[in-house]
Length: 282
Image (cartoon, rainbow, N blue to C red; front, side):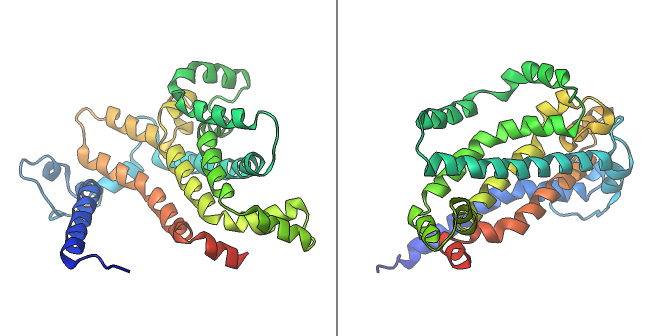
């Protein structure tokens, strides 16, 4: 096996460091600004580290309502809707991916194409129709209504992604389990499901981020202050201040990013694991 020359490896390493720095610097700047007073953030001389360290911005965004929206109720609503969306999306996508991959039925390819077409339609183009449907079902300003909308938005991509993972699992493994006495459903859960761990994790991360950061539907469907989600809360926080308090906005943005980071840290080990590791565990 030919090894890469040392100068070329050093060049690739330097490029990787540069790309990482460009990617990480906005996040660092957000956190750094959240730990500075507003006067330091608006200073003409940039502060590249929190030399005037303060936690007053975090106290402000947590304790002071953003307009008429409070942080903790918005956090609870975002967590409830996001977690529900991820759980139901993975549940339905798992069975849909199995059906599209393991069973032969009429219009199977048409269904796969329709999944792609559904992803091409801008969600905002259907916002009036969706609002009227939810209003007719009395689901406006409810976590159930917003979860249904997010689920319909996330599910096509989730099914499409899991379909590729299921297709990569040899069907002979399920057939061997059925020969050993497993039913078809039992083979799915005992063999296929453990091997789908990395795929379920990757699609779960996508669904979590999309539901957590979604703004437009939450703004239209949840129009009462006590039902708002965090993106709407942050937007209202900006509008509630006569002069933009960038330090407080950065603190609010940092608080919004923490659950996503925690969720990713919890599942990143599973994402990095390979299919072979899942086969051993199964």
